[in-house]
Length: 354
Image (cartoon, rainbow, N blue to C red; front, side, top):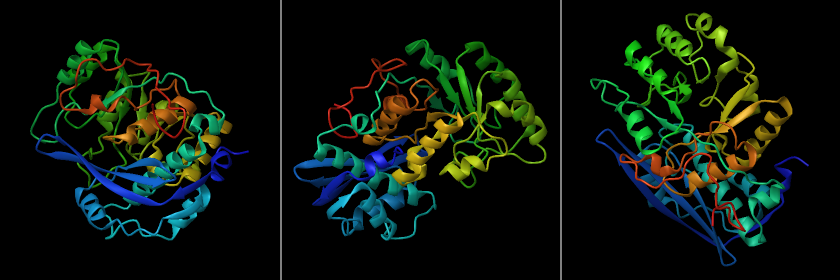
């Protein structure tokens, strides 16, 4: 059986649902908003987290999202097919990818509820043994202020709190050769995210072949994520093709197959896939093709972070998962967080932790 077939027939009874907003400010430039979707039925509750980035989409959903026709008796597969015909946004979303983000929140909540109603865990349903999860801490070194220089201060502060931490960093056009050498000196960089696939977002980075070359040569063992491949950057990237991995373009098996080079590793962010079928098909494809995978986060504020950690534990626990505990995303990182690899408290039932 395929991985999706192992869960597709799970029955799920939905009697009602509720939406709950969450938010976390990151300075004056950015506040992270998410929406928890709580599906209820048969005395149980399943939770998913909508990681859409635009606050107005969350406000509209929370104000008018309680009329979705989703109650009734379903299976995981029939519920997914039901969602094919439902407009999950009261108004068109600011960004098209948000459609998949909200779809993932609905389907992950339904999976959580179905498993709780069935009295089994996701690991049980998949026949997989969860293992301790290796994770990296993902960060941008500076703020979103274009006039503010970037320094290694965030990295050194994190290392002072949590020695041995590994990082996924976002190089920007403000990275100087001196800054790069300071980062090399830490020996703590596992991957670099060039953000070459983003347009019209706060995290956009102008494509610079010289920056690409400096970063690729300075970190010869790091994964290189999401470069912008064009006539100027291709000659720079070609010698490092075996280290190039992808995130933003990956929503399906077809997206992996369409990359400029067949990847040895990809970033699988469940929310980018929307439907559970597409996500599970991609896990199966990567296993067949010998392609590694690591999990990716989207600054989840609640149960959504637990979902990506759970999936990492059962599918790819040993890779540089961008699934650190969500407290590592806070403006002031607290003491007492777990080190990598971390053992997760998998609950006896559901797609959740105890």
